[in-house]
Image (cartoon, rainbow, N blue to C red; front, side):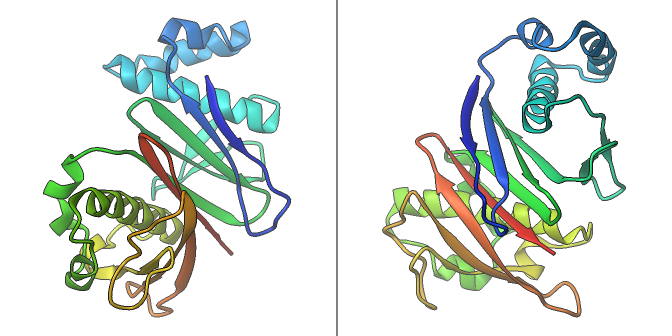
Length: 226
């Protein structure tokens, strides 16, 4: 079912749709016109488990809602998705029980959605710099939330940059989160806020301003760039 839909007239904000995957594969197929459902049934044979099949269908249903038509999703070599016959920029992300898409009429857009849990703590060394690790909260619950936001932020940056050899714990840097200062991340995070970031993978060393939203069981980070 449609969980959230964020629509804004601002040029600096994408349109975002979030779907909660409560349906079965069969129920999702019934939401498409018969011709599209038949085509998607062939596509579904590529996936071995029902979770991936459901994510595939939910993403395409959200796209139908966003553009009021059926379009084929293609992928660049970098993995970035785009619509075959539609000019709007788009991006897809999925996690346990949720699928999200972001769209913008002309600017490159990226997002990442991640279910909240404890696994992220075990791999934090793979995506955090030493400085970022030192800026984490000493409160374990707050730290876990910060880790999820940091992971999603770096996934979002990676998608925006489109450089496959980018190393998360070397090239991507999150300078601030919420109202944080230069020595630590904000411990009183609002349900939505901003994250100041930069990359040093390219010669430009570009800076980015990402936005986040915190939900009860997942977090979402998104951003746009020219």
